[in-house]
Amino acid sequence: MSATQTMPLPLKPADFASSAEVRWCPGCGGYSVLANVRRVLARLGYDRSKTVFVSGIGCSSRFPYYMNTFGFHSIHGRAATIASGLKLARPDLSVWIITGDGDALSIGGNHLLHLLRRNVDVKVLLFNNRIYGLTKGQYSPTSEQGKITKSSPDGTLEDPIRPISIAIGAEASFAARTIDGDAKHLEYVLERAAHHVGTAFVEIYQNCVIFNDGAFDYINGRDVRAENTLYLEHGKPLIFGKERDKGIRLNGLNHEIVPVASVDPSQLLHHDEKAREPSLAFLLSRMRYPEFPEPMGVFRAIDRPVYNQVVHRQIDAAVARRGLGDVQDLITGAETWNVG
Image 1: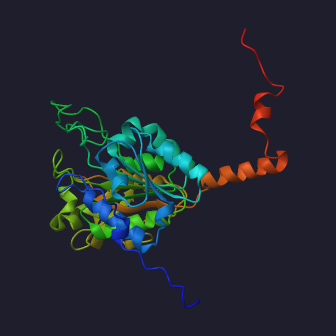
Image 2 (image 1 turned 30 degrees about the vertical axis):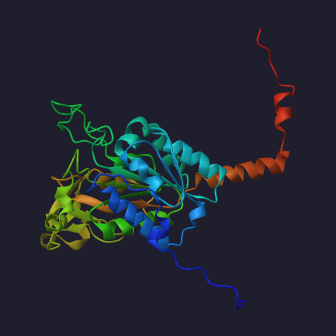
């Protein structure tokens, strides 16, 4: 290295902060997610000129404005399609999708399914506050049954969608859940997602302080978190509780809570995020408080063919066989037809 050359300075979270004023409500869980995303990207040394955040519509979808990267604030439910096209056109870019439970699972549900099954190499951060916040408090696809809102004054009738179950059912290669109030765990899951090659789907429980405040108090408070949260650790038994005295085992096709001291350790269900068969991961995704502790962490992390990579290999193979081709020849070629 010559005397005039210098090593690049380490990035700081502030390097990923744009000049835009963050305009979420005071106390919104989005602030925690934003801070931790900036922290993770800085630590991993992301190239801001090759990083793109794509969002749909909703409070969460303001996110691209607050990042000192490229961004695209798209239309309702269509972030997955735009991000897919961007990754196919520019595979060198790191593409992140910011969406919400309404944006991704209502109008955008079809697009999310196909993104997951194709395994496009993008990261999906789904802010789940179980409410429509931007439009002032209507129930969303993840609102609990019986939820009283402005659009369900007598309580909702539908069963809520479980985002992790949807992701695993669509063969997601990476599916994880975390929460805004546990910064250490949130940062860990975001970093795992950043390293994953393929679609990394992360559901983030996020508090809406105005229209659904306290929706996740049963796991957000430090005094209740240990009793009501099941932290998933690869290769380890599913144990929880303040005293680590309760475990999960299978009873036929159902899971049940058992005292750890009363069973042989081999009877406890052990977590395997690398399992090719997703049935156990799906089973965990069905566990929900208050019947069970709420699982947090990485449900599934496997290697699968990555869509943008196999598409480009197919294109390269076609070009090698037939040449580059010519659009004008295609338009004026022999296979034409007239409208009578």
